[in-house]
Image 1 (spheres, helix red, strand yellow):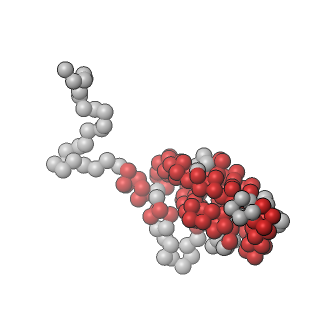
Image 2 (tube, rainbow, N blue to C red):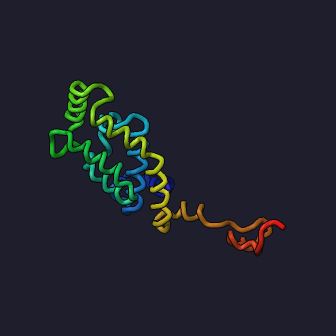
Image 3 (cartoon, helix red, strand yellow):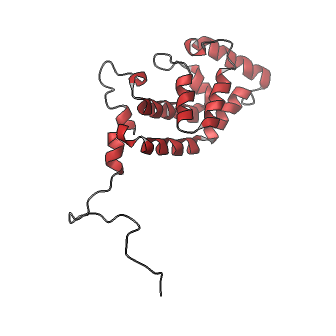
Length: 171
């Protein structure tokens, strides 16, 4: 699916926010989950995302794949910033996270615990993303090609699984 998402990345005008919704969804979930898995919400919030999208881009993507708990964790963390547009102010996000850690303790802050929960949900999230991609397979031509059965070595059609003509178990 990633090949489909980044297929036109080398063009000067590529932007993930101009992708069809299923491709944007795959981009947002893969990017967010990958960053969070590497460093929790510290990494997710400490830098700006390309073109500074609202965090709803990520929460909506997680919801579209059925990862509502992870989406809620991100949304709850975003609500801890004292701004209606935290995606636009990297310094404020860093200061707020530092302040929360000073008050609540390093790795004991609510925002860190929310990030750890998203990390814990990562396997389930990626499984849900795979199911989402299969559900929208026509938008992912590379994934579709890789998911289709291949011809047998002799060129004859491949028999679908579960069609072995075996009617009974061992004698």
